[in-house]
Image 1 (cartoon, rainbow, N blue to C red):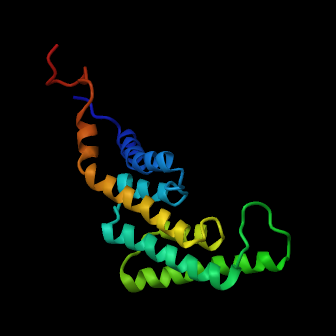
Image 2 (tube, one colour; image 1 turned 45 degrees about the horizontal axis):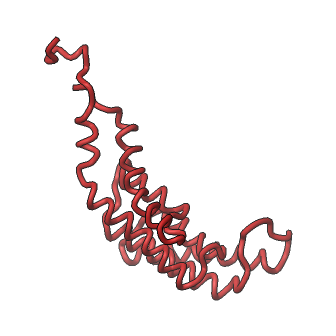
Length: 176
């Protein structure tokens, strides 16, 4: 049997992982799919070192909490939803919020042994005011939980996809 290329298997697996959060986002109208979930799905499906549940869930939780602290402590009601006026106080507060959130996320992930690089993108999503409320934090947590549960439900999917393909006509064991 001819195997599917690794890249195709990984792409199908990552898509399957995100499809759960995507379906929930569609059904609820909430942003359960957000930019940092894609890199997490990639790492689960194709990463050289796949994240543990602790790293995936804990890293994003740390990112959300650090983002909330930085945003509400520094940026207030500002948000980067478009261009920010050059040299404005709101821009300075958002920049400070971003910098502090990544620093807090990094130190807290190290302290809790939950290192997961995509969580630094999650903290920026929160700290820059894109999803800055406690309700948004719950939605982010639900999206990450959906990805985690999908990863557990699809354990072995990559091997199964690799094994399913048409027989390779050049394979000596293939009957002709």
